[in-house]
Image (cartoon, rainbow, N blue to C red; front, side, top):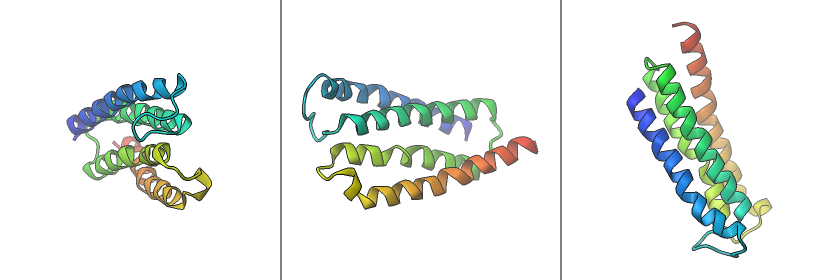
Length: 126
């Protein structure tokens, strides 16, 4: 499972690097890059992917005997956590009107929180 997390983390960090291009274009004054409209939300997506990708790689490296269930939750949560920011970066609606995004964010935290609690408990009892 460690190899899967390391691969996933590397893919996620690479995605964040690639997102830097449209992000730079938006911050240079372009109003829109493809479907992307909101630089602040795209920056959040970019940073969250960097953090989540690095966390997957670090945890998998430090804790190669990671419990499979915790690893699966970590993997899913690491990818779902930044996703609402991407959708908000493309949205024509103000953030306050995006109740679906808030619900998706809560769902993501319902996945990632038990992953980290499980990881901590497994690490402390190893």
